[in-house]
Image (cartoon, rainbow, N blue to C red; front, top):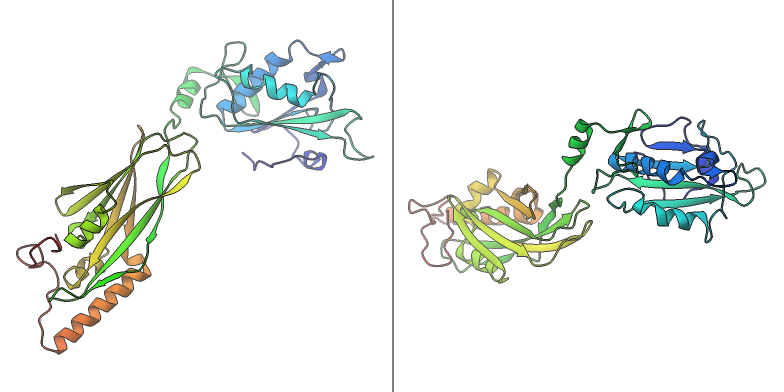
Length: 351
């Protein structure tokens, strides 16, 4: 499907490639006119074209352009009281079943002395997007599809294929990035700890309203000290569960997410210290799972080392480790045999 312009001009119509394709159909003024009036068959014929485009990948129907792609004078604008464009906008939604939504009707009037559009006439461009409510039935109780540049009745296989189209919200983690400044804690006798907050945004990339959305963040246990855990849970609407080697934080979004909408969703804290640098150097990741209505969960991973603030914190801690060694102090890297870095209490880094 070609790019959809927000307006049409006669010059644009003249530049259209001749010939009918899966995404365009030319219909001369005789398609709509019969003896100077609107043809009694027009709505039935229009219905087939609307069904075919909406059931396929969308397209454009040009009224007032002949089969060779040449403007044939256009369609009289006064065929209906209130104008042809307003009339088309009224009849198109219910010309197929279920109702067609999201289409556009453009009225292209005479553009100058060399215009191919007659006085008092216009070319009408009906832009039909692919429909999330497909398949759409035409007025003759049949379903149509664009096949080899023509609107043809659909077979059973075609209908099954359309019914398998995505009918669920498409919600994803749009981006993740550091939020605020790192928090340094030098109260641990074993060395510096640095807490970093990551903020996630989610977006509805589809055409369906997402009524129920939840996100689960899986964090390696070695990156979640008691202090980091408390910071994440401080929001009050985050639930915590555990699985071997990881903490899982879950937040449910209380309101629907509209198509195209992007929102700040949640924040999670990680704690960096000398005992978990090895896992960071090996490419530690956070795993984000998004649940939206009955759609299959979408998953995204975030490698912590991609963020400058994390790399800088790692260098700072590494530097402290080297200084401690030069002074003869023992600084442990990695988990202790007990699995918690040797620290007890709620602030202990967990594995």
